[in-house]
Image (cartoon, rainbow, N blue to C red; front, top):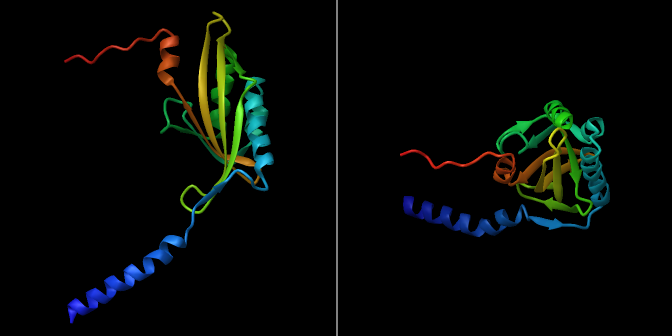
Length: 176
């Protein structure tokens, strides 16, 4: 009797699997109602970095926004206040020149864990030390989630080793 019940349960699971899999269809499109508005929000943020305008930067963020990747790696997260302090400190010692050829790609994902409205940014931020004049060009990709006209999540991806070696840091092999 147990074998029959297990067999029936297995068959039921096999028959329902297509319904379960199709229940959450995942799709993505670049053509959606808020695409232009979302790009405008993210572009306002990027232009505010270029113009050293912390107030406008923070105005583009949701109250509970999470910002990843600026303070030592992708696992470190900042809130709006921490981001504001980070850039105030940065603007005291350096200027940020954002590449005029910055590209933006709005994407809407329906279904799955990445559901939402996203804006991808590809740019180069050239940072110039105000004292020494030393410049470091930092190619970067920034991924943003926009909801209700505000950035709710921002993740920065860039070559941190390039930044560190440009600042004079060196790598040493581990001692054995």
